[in-house]
Image 1: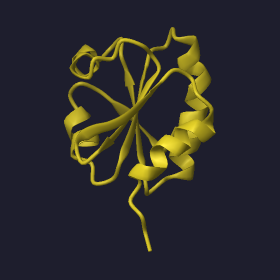
Image 2: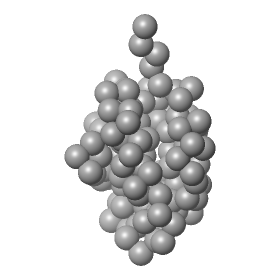
Image 3: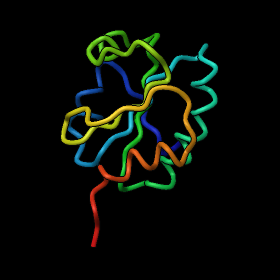
Length: 111
């Protein structure tokens, strides 16, 4: 999990909204089975796209402010943020290929 940042109500602005690179935010909770299923996929993506994508995990049980601000009602919710805005989201445990397909259009292209 060394490529994954722990997001909180207090650091969300800095880690996500002010990030220079696109950010995948995993809204999760420890008791959530599908969250545990998608966690290894999120960590793989963090490693695969290191430098192109920042990955932040937000525990919804501990961070009510951010969760409420973005209307998180189902977990896992995987939000894609770019330039300080939520640009896409996936709800539920999905295959890696589906998540990468959603993320790719938001990555910064390097020539």
